[in-house]
Image 1: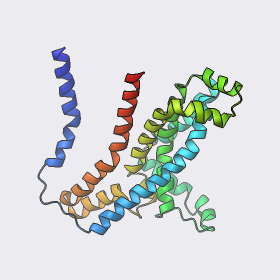
Image 2: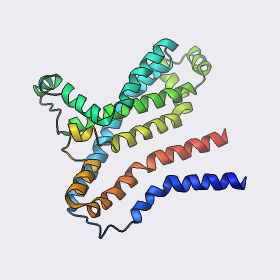
Image 3: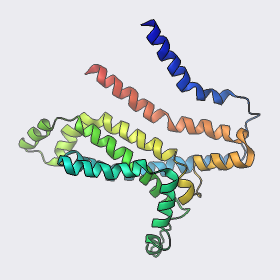
Image 4: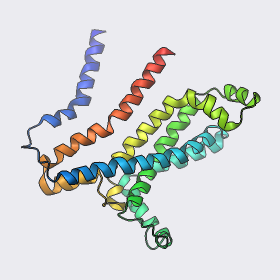
Amino acid sequence: MLVKRTAAAVFAVALLYPLAGLFVPVGPWRWGDGATIADAIRVSLVLTAIAMVVVVATGTPMALYIARAATRERLWWQAVLLISVLLPPLALGILLSLAFGPHALGAFLERFGLKMTNTPLAFVVTQVYVSIGYYTLGAVAALDGVPRALEIQAGLLGHDRWSVFGRVTFPMARLGFAVALSLAWVRALTEFGAVVITAYYPAGIPVAMWTSLENFGLPAVMPLLVVFLVTALPLPWLAHILAQRRLRRA
């Protein structure tokens, strides 16, 4: 047992070792223009929150449909979602810029004042594309843990499908939904490759970190890096802890 625990501890230390980079002397941290840092934080948090609303509003019904579909159809829809998950971010950004560009759907959207390049709308749309697959697949997995017999019984007692979802399905799958949302949040918040192509402006935290690194070096990156970690890590960490506590109580 001691050998196993020692091996596990070594594994954990090796896994967490990159965090030691926060304490490496790189010179005095350069906070630069506080307004620029605040703008980057605001852009990332506000626009990512909007993207998550879209992801939940569209991904939840889709997850319900997939979870209750026949096996063959279910596999087909999951394969479609996996495409968005597996696409390299840079490739996805290029494809989005072309698909919503002036020679495609973008020309039509611009007639209504909807510009799909370097705008908050482009930022949100890109984040939705990079994260919705994670949320929907996670939500399907959460719904798979809900006994179908309980939903059928609730329906026989006179509840409509949305009442069944609110009274039976969601309470039993809520932590799975929380984990799925936290994964989507981190995926969207930390996205750089796709966003830098479609929405270099307004600059969120990842793009601001890149420009600070290019222009001023590591001392200018460190403050944003700390903010980045503080905003990205707590939600998935908390969701994981809650899920584990629930499993232990079960």
